[in-house]
Amino acid sequence: MGILVRNLTKKYGDFQAVNGVTFEVPAGQLVALLGPSGSGKSSILRIIAGLELADTGSVELTGEDATHVPVQRRGVGFVFQHYALFRHMTIRENVAFGLELRRPKPNKDEIRARVDELLGLVQLMGHAERYPSQLSGGQRQRVALARALAPKPKVLLLDEPFGALDAKVRDELRAWLRRLHDEDHMTTLFVTHDQQEAFEVADQVIVLNHGKVEQMGPPQWLYERPATPFVTEFLGSVNVLNVETVLTMDQHGDEVPLSLDLPGSEGGRAVYVRPHDLEVQRHRDGRPCWPARIRRLTPLGGLARLVLTLHDGTDIQVQLTRQRCLELSLAQGDDVFVLPKDLKVFHQPGNFVENYMI
Ligand code: ADP
Ligand code: MG
Image (cartoon, rainbow, N blue to C red; front, side, top):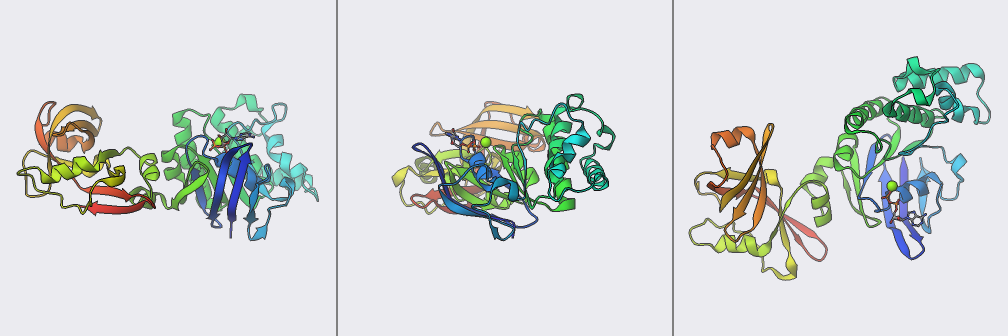
């Protein structure tokens, strides 16, 4: 058992920042808490750390109730986006800081050995005697992580730890964090608003929206089986089509109907299709397809992004490989047929999802 939170709520004044949140981070896993800014991620992390008190709910850490345990005795390691290191201390002293505070205090040799071990782990062995100002942003966050890990916490909490770094360094640190986790299997909760970051580092992702858990699961599963419109839209670009658009497409003259079982269009329901779940063809081949005109074609390296206009005027985004574009010698203004391969329809209320694989 790693981290278990049950029914957490937190209000700031009248504002419900956390609204009945329950989830588990299984021991040894790296789980991402993913949601837009303001969705309550940091509040939840701070409640787990003991830096903030929940209005209701409980927190268990490695099987023990920690709801009323003070922050110093929770055994959590914490890294923030801007976790400033102590500027007047060397890297070695920074990493040793948490160990010096331990009671019983480890002896000098033990501290030195543990700091060496950690600096090796975060690949900063040669930097022990430097000061934070002599390191890059990425190196400083690795020191912050080493400092959080030094006292051997039960769990590690990371709040957008790479958020302040530029894209390339962030990419490197993600890969590095994942490798580190594969070695030490520290139970870790990683907060981010970046879907790609969550997918790259995490075993499981918890999607948060307005202080509530929308869905939790392995990244690919969430992507393929989103439970709600919010999750669908948050996890990648998607076309949102009116049910009417899809239904009239079905009824149109000589087209092969999609035969979707869509009982009416009440409730303003929408049909979701990802750009890469659409195929483009020059001719009909007996499969359901919609006539469309290529309004824009943007080559993007190995891929191409197309904007197609359907016959009712709806624009849809399509993503094809460069190879496929060349095969069909597609150009702006061409008339083509577009085939939806995977459609998702959410039935309100309750957000029951239906997948139509074609
Ligand atoms: P996130 O980390 O997902 O961006 P936060 O947990 O920081 O979200 O904040 C959730 C909401 O609660 C935000 O709207 C934020 O403005 C509000 N909030 C957070 N902390 C406080 C506070 N101490 N006082 C008042 N409002 C707060
Ligand atoms: Mg935050």
